[in-house]
Image 1 (cartoon, rainbow, N blue to C red):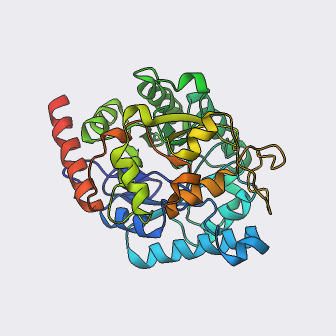
Image 2: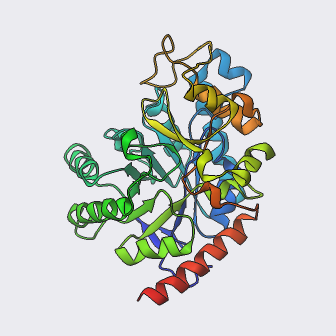
Length: 360
């Protein structure tokens, strides 16, 4: 399956195809898609945010609903594949600690964590085999995490995901740096983190490049630079195994470059999304009143927030685009067809291998 690409080694975890699925929430990266990715030899990822949203339990006990739904998704994925399946958990979540513990205890192969520095993550996976992967947007952030974990827990990250400004969803950059991102930014960030990764331990910590990686040629460029893996997300939405509504996928297929915009999120970070009627209202400065039964984000004040990002993302997966935020990467306008996950990843791997052979 890997077509000659080197496996990605995350601690003692071997990912035959050095591709990690991006964690897309709410409920875009679920067990179905993660298992399909893992079955191809890559690393499948379940997005851990608000998985219990829309259930009766969610209204009465949001933390319990989230915890139970996360455990259920992990069990579903593990039952469907013998491959590698991990979790992506947003650091800005109020119930972050609970979700991290739940994921580790449920047997997630790894936890990827961003939207803030995951300085306490190791304590939640203590006593388990779950590998820990911080998501960073600078070498400085990677160095802070590595030093903190070594001092407090006597361990280092099992890998770093370096996410650049062309990614979809919430972004760890100033808004001014996103329209449009300067070329070569991700390459420079990867070099920064590779330098940190070399100094972390006796053997270098793997670095995974993410954000705007669309095809095998893109991947080969980062492999040649020294990255051990790449992360892709946007293209996996346009697969048969992704469980979002057809109208969500159709929006990806019809998106033009000018339809991709940067919005302000109650998370406290900018986000890259496709224009919908709801997003157009946000861009005009309009909000949407909502009732909040549980403050799911540390950074959100429900009394002043113009809208509920969890509800808007949940509406997207159901296909209610008039009231939805649909996140996507900057290359979404290049997505033109829906294919199987296997067809996508096999083509991606073959193209990466051919390009690597040309580069070297």
